[in-house]
Length: 194
Image (cartoon, rainbow, N blue to C red; front, side):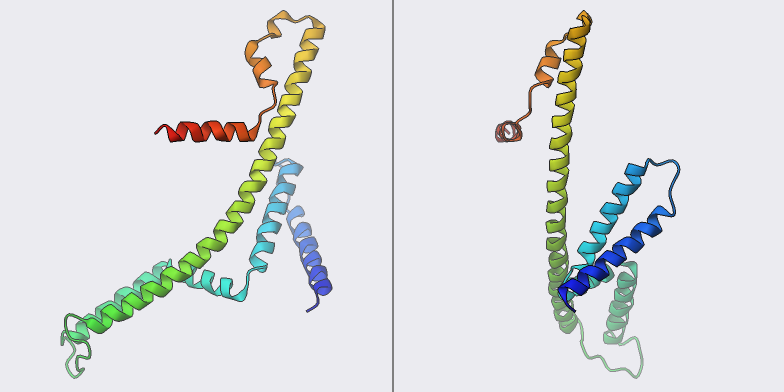
């Protein structure tokens, strides 16, 4: 499928999602909140759709291995295996007598593969989390900048109106721009003291 065709399909899907979500508006939520929810959901769906077949397979295995169905299947499997090999079923010859060396090997191999699939899923999720964290940081920095600007404006308005109680040394400090790198260095300095 061509890139242009894929973009058109993605846009049609995004438009359908937007129409579907906006038709079910919640009167208790502001439009901007609903719009943000839609955008975040759309981004999450796009990220899921962009996964490679290997990532989808690893996620499916991880999801199944983390389910109660997986647990119950293993309880039954181990129970039947042990009972057969302890001779509880007449007519069925033990194929892995105690101490169940074959079972140990099979379970060890399964654990190796399952842990690999879990790590693949976690690594992919970690990349997504890093992107979200970067977005959160950018939004937080923008909000901090806007709040600082508003504090300066309100301080100037109070000064111009002659409101004496409005002066506060802490407000002067809050009106100063925050340098994220300086804050980060201070956090690291405090952590290094431990």
